[in-house]
Length: 197
Ligand SMILES: Cc1cc2nc3c(=O)[nH]c(=O)nc-3n(C[C@H](O)[C@H](O)[C@H](O)COP(=O)(O)O)c2cc1C
Image 1 (cartoon, rainbow, N blue to C red):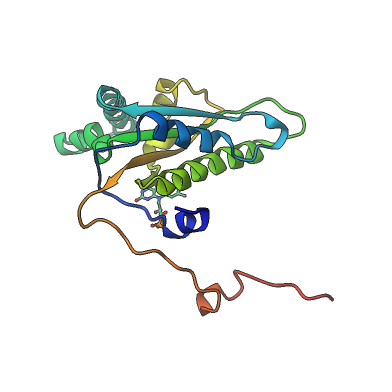
Image 2 (cartoon, rainbow, N blue to C red):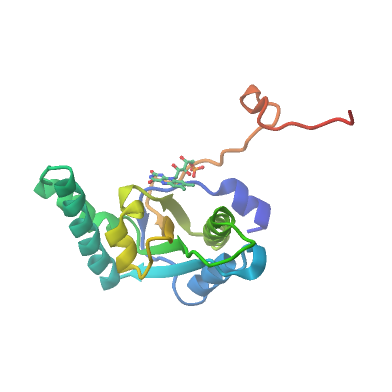
């Protein structure tokens, strides 16, 4: 698949099934992420691959973090909510966590470091699409939870940019391309072409 086709056909697919990317395919997705533009070459990112039993272990972390979030609000989670947290990563065979890792720099602000990590996430999605996989970028409260970050080896100044769910689209879950039409009134004021003034 060529680059434009991958960019223009990528959609968020909520139900992904095996096979997920492995071997050379997974390596290419990781390489694509690491080829993202990165001001100052600070490498302000971390990629964590979760598959198989690692997804179960991480699901337990998500459930524990959820309990603590509920408790801090004076609430108690229901068994159903806990099961949902524990089994969330079952929505895809592979989940790639993309994190922005804060690097000390007098020149490159954190916003740019985060932007580089977000570009890495998008590169990974496009690479996965080009290789024929479905994908979905997810965040949610867990992405901002210090316990979840800690479990991934991240510090308080780092950030989870996204949980990228990767696999094959389940039957009936594929979506048509968006095909943005620049002439559509929806894009008035969104795309501007400045004339010489
Ligand atoms: C930073 C970020 C976080 C996202 N988090 C979620 C999420 O938690 N849950 C979700 O359903 N979709 C999430 N999405 C996916 C968007 O909802 C999706 O990209 C959007 O609806 C456009 O659909 P498309 O990806 O099919 O073009 C996220 C996307 C981005 C860029």
